[in-house]
Length: 66
Image 1: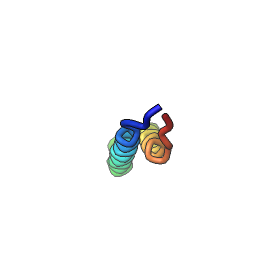
Image 2 (image 1 turned 30 degrees about the vertical axis):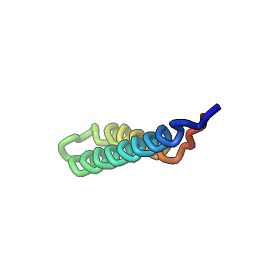
Image 3 (image 1 turned 90 degrees about the vertical axis):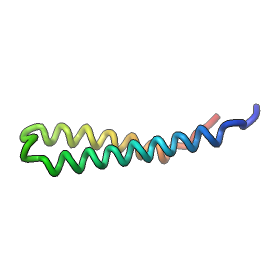
Image 4 (image 1 turned 120 degrees about the vertical axis):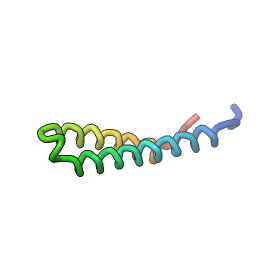
């Protein structure tokens, strides 16, 4: 089988992982800095933001196989 298009898919996955990671970090930052407004929901939203950060890290670290 040919490896045609393999590099582009891998690069797109890494780029999407970077974007997801940055968005997760920004969401986590704004969640933590507005903790007084969120009240009891701060932990819940922080947990959700951490999931997005971990997904971004996994996408950046994972190897694409074809």
